[in-house]
Image 1 (spheres, one colour):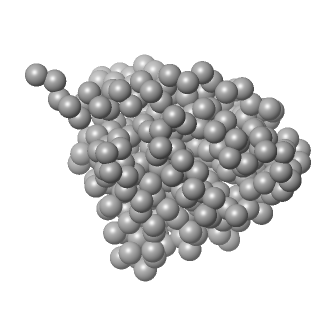
Image 2 (tube, one colour):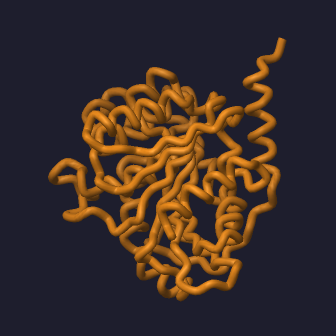
Image 3 (tube, helix red, strand yellow):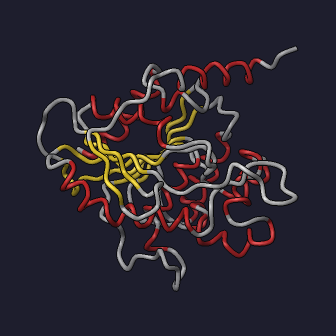
Length: 290
């Protein structure tokens, strides 16, 4: 007997991945590695001084999932009048470590090196690639593992002292819209989200506790930056409990984080231009950007 939740998830994933890739208007490197690139999409309405939306793709920080799968979302946001920067970054190997049981999620420290470097380089890169982009109105969004990276990018000023990624001041962002983010690493590990990807990202269980405070969004609060989480109530990939736990951690730290829970929605409609949930994502971004 099939599980209706699994069937729905598979159908939603198939729909989200059915769209052809959307080619960017420009691509620029932010480092020497082939994965250290940003694709830029100009606003399709021809408007001037459009807010810049930085997109960080998901895929459990694993190599098989690159930025191509989220280009339909990037194209959709460009059609809504945003300038868009779709960031690539180094991810884990497709081959497990010796003795491992699955693809390795992320690279420590390279995944974080890349997101930090890309965010630092983006104002200059966007000014050259998208002259109409208003980098003073930058919103960061990301889906799933990319949602974690979006929250992390907005929290670099609260990283522990001595962290190579720490900023002296809050990053100049209008806000963050995190889509089904892996936002609480402890709970995600308890729930075996993405097959233990959080521990893999941090270098394995033996490094998990040591590195948690450098990477876990739930440990990097408050940020003082406007943040909204959008999550599907029926998500079985990253359960909604993870978002609720992050929002509760923010409240405990004295910060209000918005949470929009979409009934009847799973993990993938948030990045599917054919789904109503994607329109909600655009609206949440617009509320922060305009």
